[in-house]
Length: 199
Length: 82
Image (cartoon, rainbow over all chains, first blue to last red; front, top):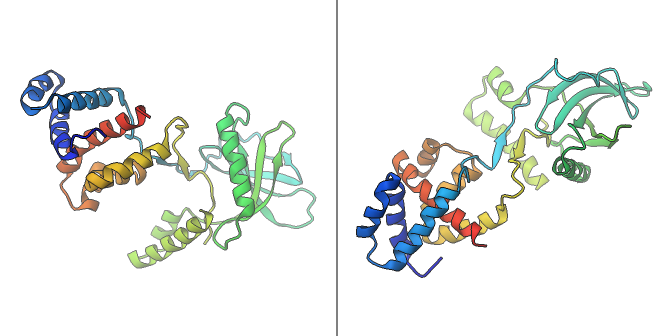
């Protein structure tokens, strides 16, 4: 930041950005006694014009985890590792999640298998997926699903095998049980403790 | 209850967005203009709307709305000169 006090900059800046573009020079003429202030505010206006959508989209995007039973069910019935895919139970930003059982019927345990979508077209996604796998493998917390296994399909599509947890999305659960604010906050604290642990 | 680390929450796919640089710049603005810093924090990192931000800070929606463009302009300016 230049040496111009921010108190001076901000009042001029807020006012000038509130004006239509054609009215700005006239306003600056009377609002900026010092050329340095005007120069700085002008460069900030320029940044504003270049900024496009900057910061307008929140850093974190909520993705609904709605079941999508009719989409891309090609994996149902197939085998991944020692697991037989039974049904698609969810879809998220990075891929699909399936319910699966042991194909060799050694145990009757059901698991959730997460497959990264596309797999190849996005190095970014793949990197995130690998990072998640590593993170999950190191986590041991009663409120975080355990990572049981992981690998790649014959086609090279990476997957994670996790505990299958039957349940409702948290907001549905709260509504269905008609939880009051204190009870909801109690659940929220549990979520926070898991998130804190994961960080 | 179990929470899974799925993409329920997925960081916006903007690898070119310099989150660390933004955090640093935010720290600088907070020193001289704490309220404006909080506005950016709540809107961008917290995902709150203009009205929700105003409510959280106990100020009017018009105040948030007036300070938001300048905050974006200043932060963009800071990040692009790095």
